[in-house]
Length: 126
Image (cartoon, rainbow, N blue to C red; front, side):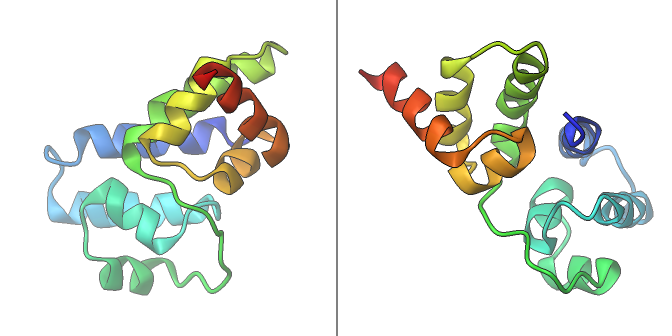
């Protein structure tokens, strides 16, 4: 659950990105980069800033791997909270994957194994 505040921050920025000034978006991009969890491309999707600008701002050289689309953040938060309560929320797993997070990134964010997440998502489809 250590990544929950970072994911919540990303969701807030994405939901409010049209209300921010450009300077505020730049500041939010830098703040998201400080979590050292998101890639430049992901931060660009959250803020609406150009990927090249975000990469210049965060100067992140290591790769985080995995796809993470803003539409999946709400489902990821639901899943992270369920995981903290030691509950399985197979529907949240399936919804998050369908909304655009890769199983690799979902495993990294939730601390659950990629194979378990994939298996749980398949159980919903069955």
